Length: 361
Image (tube, rainbow, N blue to C red; front, top):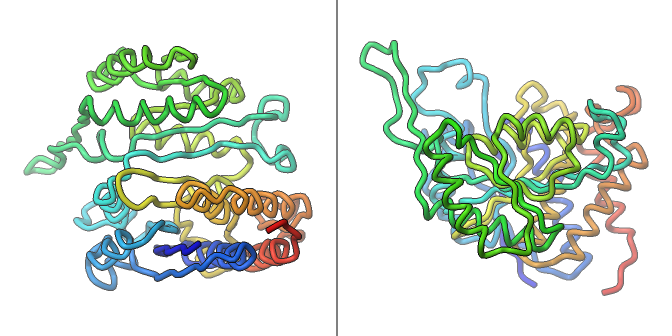
């Protein structure tokens, strides 16, 4: 099979982790006799510095011409510490989502048994946790207009906007995933306060009638945030709006033991994007200490979601789990700094594991 991907390393540790993920992709393709071609392009702060645009036209053309996008991370302290900046790296990510029509971000929250000791929660709470967060990506307060400041800069405003059609497509998608899993869907909103949430609930209640085999529950976002900590294993599929999903999925990632462990897939009307959910971690850039596992697991999702190559994705997850059991991990999840491995060493170990693994072709 021919696989054509766009590689967008981005900022900070993005280049380091994406390099390891790409090597894993190459190794898997070689093992399963796929033909992989790829090109790199700019996004985020690196793109601003090079061409003055966080999502250049050339990057968008490459994404549209590719079968999938492997994305690293964006963000830089230069822009984080300057609230008056008109151009920001994050605008590149939002532009990519909007222009590619990436309306759904899928984030699996799965506990590796060998990492339970790293979770801030008791082992009995997180054991067997396995749920999926589906976050709406192209609507809500991140994209609502008007947005800005008053002329004297003493007042700022953001607008949260959703349409019925935006809600319908993401809720239907969530139900389809729930049907493939344990047939339970939690719809998260703030319908007791927000008009947009009341529209979400109204639309979802209509759609619910089309899926009688799925158990549906509605939950306010503050309660959901509490329940994810108290009883994470009660969830199967969660669907929610853009900002709520952003916050809840970062919260959920921590219970797995490390933010560096969770992959994600953003899907929609054009090319899908696969990325770790962590940020650019600029403090670690160039030090070869960042955890590449979320990026590598994103490659597993890419094989499965973009190419329907499930054995390839399964092998990558097997290799990642083996590296954790063997203790070949970076300092964020190692038992001590002395026993930790470099980013490149972890990536190479996984490449070697996949290369040596006997499979039936």
